[in-house]
Image (cartoon, rainbow, N blue to C red; front, side, top):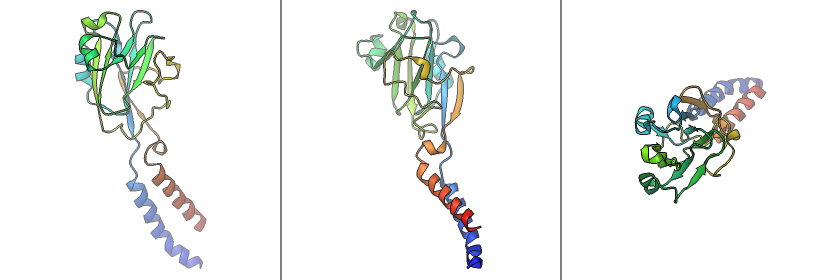
Length: 194
């Protein structure tokens, strides 16, 4: 019986390798500091900033760094963006000095400052596409940022020194959890046979 199990070992090893090869690689979400080192402030060309950093993908994060009491971050629809009007606000954040927002869907996102600076260009339009970061749905800290207005930013991802940084999301957290578990189980079975 021992000889038969030794003959199955190469077959099982190939099977495990095949399953591992089919698994998607770890998704990568990118953290963007809006406005780079200038942050979310008046007199910054956010249209040029978007052109510099696009494409943006579902799962990416936007980090708004601003001065408390002097500006805010308001997510609006396209009409609110065009008219600098917060009446149809989807979310609004004005506490602390930073706000992290995850692009959870592949769609257009619009942000304004409602303190009057929007009229001089303090507004941001970003299109998130399906793509590299879309299989994750979570950040390194697994926090959600766009559901609660005026929430504390302490649970959000930490500010990065560069304007664009990647954070690998563990495979088991995404859609590849079941095949990953199957591969681990097959590997455990192989170890028992030895």
